[in-house]
Image (cartoon, rainbow, N blue to C red; front, side, top):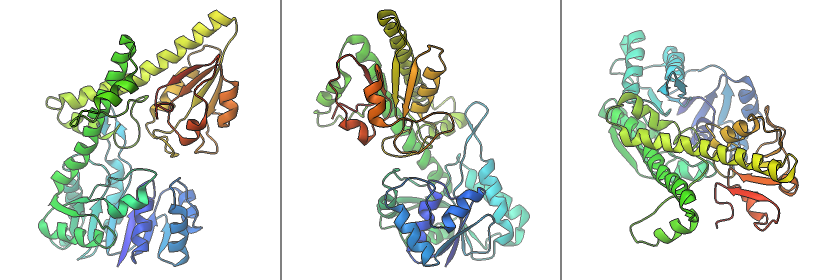
Length: 402
C-alpha cells in the first residue's frame, strides 16, 4: 500500500507519520520547500510531543519521504487549509487545487479522501471535478470524507485511539476508506455518507464554541457583578448534570474559531445560536483588550510614568506553538497598537522567534512588569507567584485558578 498525503501541516504530517509507522509507504506533498526539506531530514517543523522520534523512525526506515509534487499511489489524502474569504465564507480553493493536482495520477481502484474541514457538499463537488476530467474513472475509484478530531499536544495518541467518522460518496467508498484507516486507528470507525461526515466535523466544533461562549459570557456577567467566575463555575459544576467549561481570552485555532462559520455561512437563517456564540467569543477578546488598555492609562495617571506590560502567551491554547486564529495574538497586537506608550514584554515559551514581536523570557518579563496579562495558560506560567505586591495581574485564562 502506498499513500500520498497532500499537505504536511499540523494534521497532514502527523497522520502521514502514523500511517507510515503502520507499514504504509507514504509520500508527503507540500508547496513549502522548507517543509519538504525538513521532513526529508527527519526534522519537525511543528511542535508536538513525541512526534520528532516517530518522524525519524519512519524516515530512517524509508517509509516516509516528502516532495513538492504528487505521484502515483493507491490512496490520496487531501489535508490542506480551508481559510476564509469575504465575510467569513469558507474558501475551498486549496482543497480544489490539491484535488486537481492528483487527478492525473488516479487509477482504477484508488482511494481519494478529503480530511480538510469543508462545507457540506464539498466531497461531492470534488468528485464531480475528478470525473469531469477523468470520466473513465466514474465508478472505478473510491471517494470519501474523514475529518480529523485531534487535540494538539496529544495528537499521536488521539490519531490512534479516537473514533473516526467516515463518509463515502457511496457505500463501497466508505468501506474502502474504513479499511485504510483500520490499519492504524484503534478507535471505532463509524460509517456514514459524505455530507453527514462533513456536517459532523462542523457540528463538533460548533458545539464546543457554544459551550465556551456560555463560559465567556458568564465571565463578563461576573465581572459586572463582582463575583469570582472561577469559584462560581467550580461550585456550579458540583451539580451532577452541569459541566461548564473554563472561560478564556476568546476562542482560537484552526477548528473551533473557524468551523462554525461554515454552518453560519451556508444556513444563516437557521444557525442563530451558533452565530451568536461566535459573536460572544469574538467580543471576549475585545473586552480583554479594553481592560488592559484602561489599566495602562490608569497606571500612568497614578504613577506619573508609563508601565511595563508583560503579555503572557501568544498560542491559541496551552503548551503548543500554534498561533492560528489566536485571540492571544489579537489582543497582544491590539494592545501594542493602541498608542499608550507603555513598554511591552511579549512571552511565548513554545516558539523561538516571531516576525512581529521581540520575545522575552518568562521570568524576566514577569519580574520587570507592572501589569501582567495572562493570555494563554502555559505550564511555565503556573510556576510564577500569584502574590506579587505592586503588580496588576489580569488572569484571563485561569493560570492561578488550579
